[in-house]
Length: 254
Image 1: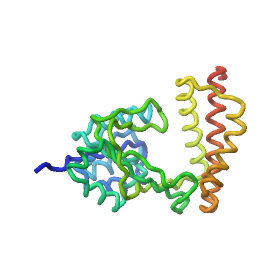
Image 2: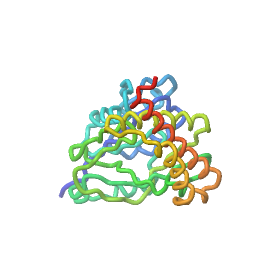
Image 3: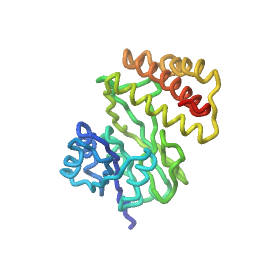
Image 4: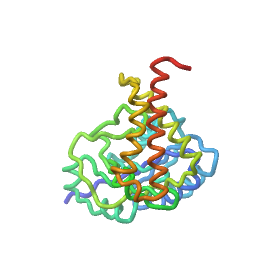
């Protein structure tokens, strides 16, 4: 009788002492946990060692490269990708453990909904939920896409959605949130330029407004209260910054 394949979970970190403990606790059922750290200056290395994770350090160049590197260090072909500010819910863990050997044969990847908590509230709308992510996959049956932001593993085979949420803790203060939005906008602009995309006038005028409208009205962000409003506004700001940075790149503005 065939057995379920072993699963390696992998996480990348950088000064995540406040959150990595809860993440690793939620992975204590995995056959292996691999952490690749970008030379944290807080207690992240000590915490990871305390949980018995296989701990490595590697200088960060991009999310895609760091996650790809972490995946290659895993001992098993089936890997579970988890961010340091995420944790596996009990329902998600149970759904994974109930998979049969036949499921692993038929499918190359399994997707889960990600639920985000922002400013103490679980967000149910605002384009944040349901936010399906491909997180459990066979590393020999697919490849990473070329993006350095919104990077993802693209499976070569069938994908199945499973029950259970990835719980995402995003309780960022406004300043940190804005810095993150700006950072992602910079990386997205570089990706767009490499793909041959160029900024047009409507990208920096109409599209930011539409992003806000889509999140706040179409995706019912107003039902998430003040949090939904902030998420929608930040979406519009991120769109504006992304295309303005692309405009700078394509016109070589220093």
